Image (cartoon, rainbow, N blue to C red; front, side):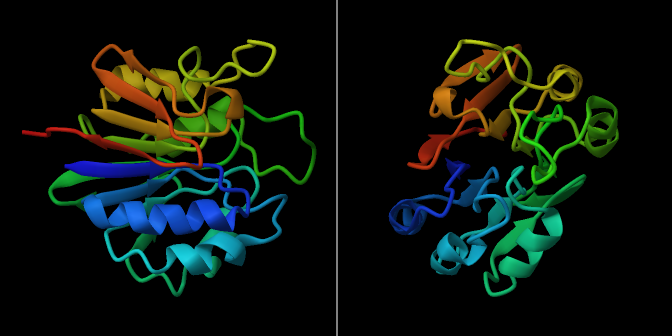
Length: 202
């Protein structure tokens, strides 16, 4: 299965138009959150991305709520928004959890969850599928500009337990497009330019 993965568009229309072009060559599109800036400008990119006809799996970032994202994607008929829930595409299970995990230092505007809440939101993740999260697993693709680790322990625990073949995240801009392997799972911090990769689920 060929994927186009992205995150953190933050109202970047040019990046959104590029993703529409790239989506023509893949089977599934994954958007790992932060389409808006502080809850403003969701339509800026989502009205462009709505031209993507391939199955598209999205989670909210910490800059938009799941309710805001669902409302803004009503015209994007091939998109599915996940947050503490899953779906199946082509026989492959997907699970999604959005928001900043753990709670960010950004204040009340940020759509955040603590590790206990995140553990509950992750609890239904199936074995061996695709996990889409806004925040990275702890100590993977989660180092900020000061090289401090900013990821989530609960997401890391989920990855080690459920062994998804692919984990797509964003959130930590300094590690955009970085990939690491956590035991059997490929973990990608996608970024706004889009990363195409292929995973064999047979």
